[in-house]
Structure formats: C-alpha cells, structure tokens
Image (cartoon, rainbow, N blue to C red; front, side, top):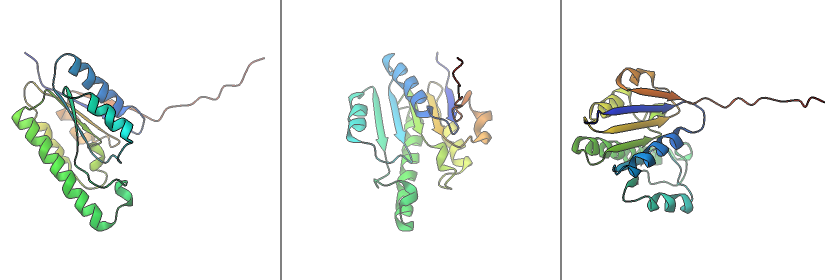
Length: 170
C-alpha cells in the first residue's frame, strides 16, 4: 500500500516546476492520474498550452486566473478579481484532495502566493492536511515556507546557479 507523500520545491533557482512536472510525468507513465493547478503564471504561449493538452487524460492542467497579464501589472480592482479566481483554484485543490480524484496533485507556484498576501500559511497547512493516504502532493514556488517543512516528507531548494569565470591557461 502506498503512503502519502508531500514534497516542496522552493527557492529562487530555476527548475522547480520542471522537477515537479518530471515527477508527475513519471507517475503518469505508471498509470497514475495527475492534476496540475497553476497559480501566478502569466498565460503561456499556445504551443506550451497545446503541449500540456497532449498529456491528457493522464495529466490534466487547470488554471483559474483569468487575466493574461502578470499579477503585478493588474489594477487593484483586477487584483481583487484575480484573488477570487485564485481562491477558487485553492478550493478546487482541496476538493480534489478530499475526493481523491487524482493520485498526484501538483500546485505550481502556490508557495509564491504567500509572498503576495493572497494565501496564508494556515491555508497551505489546511491543504496539506487534506492529502489522502495514497496521494502525492508537490508544491512549488520561490518562497521557502519553512513553517510547512515539519508537515512534508521532502524539501528541495533550488538556488540561483553559480557561474564560474574561467580564464584559459596557455
């Protein structure tokens, strides 16, 4: 019997979403049903969205944000509307976990919602508490959310890559 598993991918480095998606693809290839919910992602090009659609039905992608612009560039009224949309996405994530609709749930950039004051640590803890005995949950975002670490199985922090300057030796 599988045990529930919760993994955070955080930090300012690149590869958080790629790592979580890679794990999701691997688990989908094993016959598991994978859901991806995106938060705070500007709308991507049609090619990327079309690629995600090709992964269905094993991997399903959901977005609740409506505005094509980056959250920071929205007016105050638009931000308020977008926050309602994001909260709908959080409620959907809780419902999916409670009903065990999927084996794997990836919440892309959910940790970054705390930086903007859209989601509290208590709300994230509530989501973690809903993870069923046979469900895997991946959370990604730049915020480390260390307060959540005692409630998860693994944390991977990605930092900004170090670039060494090499001088040729002649």
